[in-house]
Amino acid sequence: MIIHAVAAADSWSEVKPSRHWWSAFLAATAAAMQPPQQQQRGSSAGDTSDGGSSGSDADDGITPAYSNPQGSNPQGFTPQGFSVMVWALGKLQRRPGADWAAVLYAATRDQLPGFSPQGLSNLGLGLASMGALGLPRPDRAWAEAYVAAAVDARHGFSSQGLANLLW
Image (cartoon, rainbow, N blue to C red):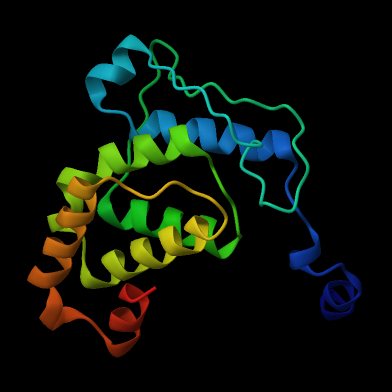
């Protein structure tokens, strides 16, 4: 019976979260990426993207404010959390916007040496996928830190991980 229900259901690929959902998701991730001192103050970074939709969606005027309300205590992201989130956004062909990217780059730059080889390759592949959709590239300092972390971890990469670095 369950098999019939699953077979008759629309495929997951046809189910898409609303732009409001994406806007809230990106706002929450940007807030969680902020350093603790900015989280306590409540930081804000406007986004000029179309709410995180892919390049094929029309602009609906959603401009998420990346803020962390007083009293909230987000756990932040581990290196694995960053890499999986960025990989997933790239896989889903999402373009979070320049402000979100700036928060990501600032939050990850000093953590890059702690990323696993798999994490570095997933991070690179996700950023490359989103870059094809218009996500701004990181600055030179971030790129140099990324390359240095990859060189340090070079013996731990799988063949697929090395291929992902080339994206």
